[in-house]
Length: 492
Image (cartoon, rainbow, N blue to C red):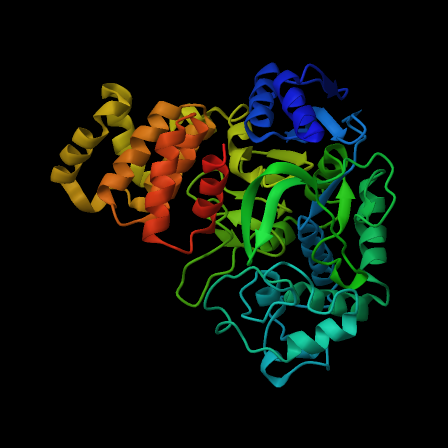
């Protein structure tokens, strides 16, 4: 309770930002203060690179909650699966050196493979499209723990999850294999290869490999309100420490700790030719895998493509390559806008990738949320009408648009995305109007009721939240999130 109270007080105050030499933008920092309050983030770092220079560098909050240690620009955060972006660079360095090709079958480099694995390509492994069984279980524990041989033998005995290239599914096995290939081709451990070929050339002074078992100077720690129940992440009421370890054989997938300043330096080195010699290598690394059906797929609706260690946003303008890690850290590169944004936090579940576009909007006016950028294209005509008439007119506006062209109207998911976006922008009445419209259109959708309940809870309408969580659970008895929130709300 003391820890939770401390977090609450910190998030309400946030009086001091530790600034770098570049200074900070008041608008950006005000936006991030709001995010810290909304999501109860103990500590956060941000860096922004524009036209080849670091223009923002700042830290805020409490790095170590137990001892009340303030975050500074020197604080160190785990970047978890953002490590895969470094693995992508390592692979492209070997491509530039002529030691491998992306579409080579992995059997060219490794012998200890089941027959059904031998034709898989390096590109498929890197883009999570291989269909391989996962070397971690539903609670994200390695199948053999620290024992590499045991994990390897167990995963090799499992069947494929789908036909290679058929779809995207996040998979750690491919990165373990990539580590084996890198070590065979270079004659050194993956960790040493990255340290020598990336950390040192980029001049990274705070970056290293490590986890919760290591003593890391200036560590920002790791915290969470989440717990994993039956493979699903559920939100609890109390803050807890998050303890994770990454054995050596797993460090192609996760394990780097760093800070926003160092990540900014690495991104500069990546794009100025220090780490990769050719612009074509960047293009190859950030090109999404095209599935067997001709489409792209990625972790979510925003990151809708998967490239070489980098999730990517495929869209008509302001495309982005954006590694994400631990539901707590992310950095986006906008290659067409000469802009990069880094956000590191010490709270699992923040998912900063969902608001990095909004930070970018402070530097690229066309990306500002006020323009409707980032919303599904299908919602834009309805949005335009409601901005003119008021969001309380949503049902009537929908009927008018439906009469004109029913096929052009947004689907359930698009309306859901819009509702959540409005809520993150502190426009709760507008968000509720859209989510209520969504349940009127999709009265049998458990997800629609769950989303409305979540925003009602955020708005302080406890009876409304309980009613809609209850309806969601009636439609889908397996909805763990609704069940968890009902327990919490009905207990108080």
